[in-house]
Amino acid sequence: VVKADAYGHGAVTVARTVLAAGAHWLGVATVPEGIELRENGISAPILVLGAVNAADEMRAIAHWQLQPTLTNPHQAMGAAKELGNSEHPYPVHLKIDTGMSRLGVGWESAVSFIQQVQELPNLVIASIYSHFATADDPDPMFMYQQHERFITVVNQLQQNGDRQPCLHIANSAATLRDSTLHHNRVRIGLATYGLYPSLHVQDQFKENRLRPVMQIKARITQVKLVGTGTGVSYGRQFVTQRPTSLAIVGIGYADGVPRNLSNKMMVLLRGEWVRQVGAITMDMLMIDVTDLPEVQPGEVVTVLGTDGSNHISAHDWAMLLGTIPWEILCGFKHRLPRINMD
Image 1 (cartoon, rainbow, N blue to C red):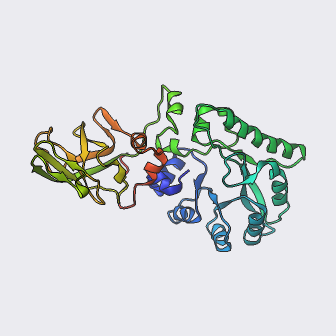
Image 2: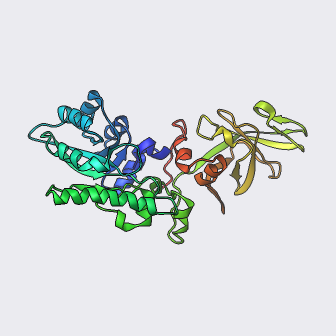
Image 3: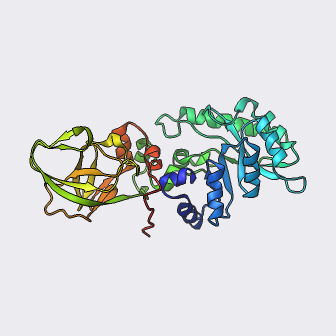
């Protein structure tokens, strides 16, 4: 799954990497995300996970050979009008809501919906899928309840003698937790980028741990000595308690470092923990380097990632902010260059 610019990592680079590593399909959220991949020479099948309703978007799907998700009969009728022809039915994917209460037709009426689509001459069902709401939760009960609903739909199709297309329901957490949920495909999102969906899932894997792909580095642009009682940055949210050596680092919230981490986060410099001080600004943040000797402009600060034996992860930031690592990764902006270190 390479939606949201591959969770902030760079969709084109990640797409090429995962396909070379053995992935067969790519998943995006929107039509423009799929077009970006096609324009950069990606020819693999691309599933658009979001719902598409507008006729011009359907025509763009056909032009760029993307594959849409259909979530209701009205949308299916629109797709049949805009996609394919009698000689070459167009592949579509049907989303079943088994308990996420987001996209998809309710599982209770899914068989009827599937049969309606099967009768449309311009379309062919390439897969039927659903999505787990609680696969990363310590209690697996609702995950398995959703799976039972999904299997109920599949069994009803088999009893009716309908052809069973490709099936998929497992996200990263379900893929890691239980191979019986894999079916014909799995949809790997966060795990692609080396992060576990929850600490509970991480605790199940003591060996062969995932390793985060992304590191965020920035350079020191200035070092200055200020006296005791000096306010730092907007609002004077931090006031020095001693003569302090401040290093100004060229990265800020416009790049994806959340402003709410101000005076909460640590960075790594020369492998050592260093405190961030003052309000994080649009393009810069300040760190207290008083305890490190002769820090110079141009030195590299690790904002996220590993330096020496220490590591800062998106999970660390998420815990400080009361959010999830997905949001952290997706926040890194395009003005940060993506550099492949392999």
